[in-house]
Image 1: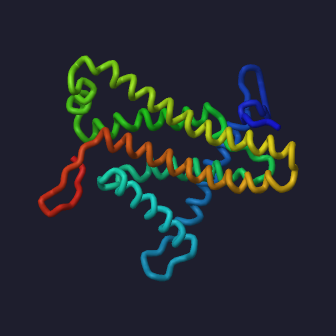
Image 2: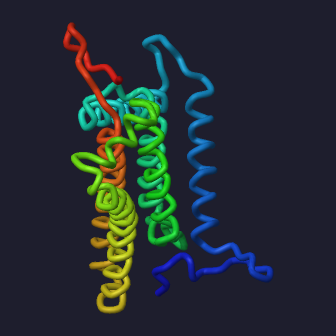
Image 3: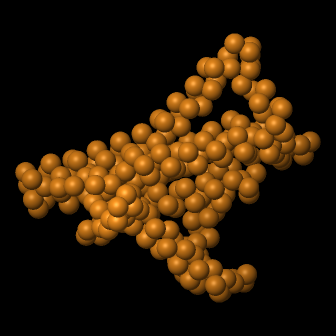
Length: 231
């Protein structure tokens, strides 16, 4: 049983190849784009809304509230980025029930790309919130001697973010493969269901950690009326 989608090559021409990671990643993006277009093309502002719009509002508001709770900031500018991370990872893991499908999150290249997106987004949000000089000054606090350690910390947590997601998805696939060889009917089904739960949890953890890293790079203060505002 193949557990790494990188090793499944559908088409190759010289050094250029299309493996399962690329194919299924683009398939997920196309699926999410299509669903978004279908759900949002007839949005209603009244009380009579479709079931799909109701589901969309529940998902968006759930992500909105989670970002606000984790970051203690107004979630508006973070919602598109963190929400996209969560929906992509969750969809990639949930589609494991489809025969022949291989989750691209089981590839280290995919999880590394997602972690790099977070690695780039953190300083961008930090600079936008505090300004370049104030944000860069964080790296020399409490003393300038901490500069290399702070840089290593930024890189190591990005690596940890990628390896954590990859390791959890890959380990679930390995366990299912082992049980499939031992008991081909009962345990694989149970493990597949547990794998879906684990996949959703991992999508949630990845999005929350991304928001924690972004929140640590931005500042917040409370106005006189007690409302949370970004600086």
